[in-house]
Image (cartoon, rainbow, N blue to C red):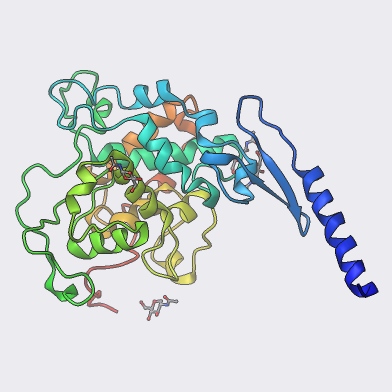
Length: 321
Ligand SMILES: *[C@@H]1O[C@H](CO)[C@@H](O)[C@H](O)[C@H]1NC(C)=O
Ligand SMILES: *[C@@H]1O[C@H](CO)[C@@H](O)[C@H](O)[C@H]1NC(C)=O
Ligand SMILES: *[C@@H]1O[C@H](CO)[C@@H](O)[C@H](O)[C@H]1NC(C)=O
Ligand SMILES: *[C@@H]1O[C@H](CO)[C@@H](O)[C@H](O)[C@H]1NC(C)=O
């Protein structure tokens, strides 16, 4: 053995010992937290709920601060006989799906308050989009989130032939709204399916048969930008997005309002104080209260609203520009 090789072996042995020593067990319950340092940054691995070395896994995980009783509290009416998806949605599916995105910062970014706020915001979208609550519903209109898991009376097949080369419609498949933040159209089923490695173009019905998959698709949408240079709803919400000059000019500011913009565009934003927007905001604030964070932490109405915002992705180019 040359001395250079010997030095390398000694170095590697030392490194292995160092890593073994630096891997500690924290956790007060039965979750083991593995810790290592690289370039002065702390990385952790918490097993199934936050797997893979990530800076985010050093923080609380979602199940540390959001438990079964809280899920039941938020979605208290979903299993009443008149609900449309009785027995479908549950806490376990949500946590199983969320676990895959926790290493990327979903519900694990910032302090506990911000973490809980992100879960309230994400679920606020979900609750509003799956609600069958109406003005006189028992328990109030906000207690009826996760009542649906698919669109009830689709008026069409949502097949856009423009995407026939990339995301061709499968004969017999219908791409109507399904899921926790409902997916519509062949190209959206195609893109989500590609990302999650599930053949949703042939089997869009999987989304209404598997609650974990339905939550996975929704969290993926929350975490993933529509376009490379745009922020995801997550980026916007946790403050990772810096608005450009154009954004500022078009009234897109960091906050809950812009998450609606990036997810739904003109169908919700830039139309003034309309119901489809206010219903989403109301669910978010209601969940903040139920989680004990309190709606006052959400900040002033201008951050919550997107009433005056121009869409990130306008459906038609403005004639004036
Ligand atoms: C938690 O973070 C938020 C924003 O990221 C901040 O406004 C708040 O003061 C922090 N709370 C505590 C207790 O540090
Ligand atoms: C982890 O939590 C701390 C405070 O609770 C926060 O300051 C820090 O930003 C969080 N880490 C990440 C990567 O968000
Ligand atoms: C539901 O979907 C998840 C994610 O794709 C998958 O791991 C699981 O096996 C599915 N469950 C069933 C019963 O098909
Ligand atoms: C800003 O807006 C103008 C006019 O709408 C557009 O031509 C330009 O490409 C935009 N710039 C960026 C960086 O998006």
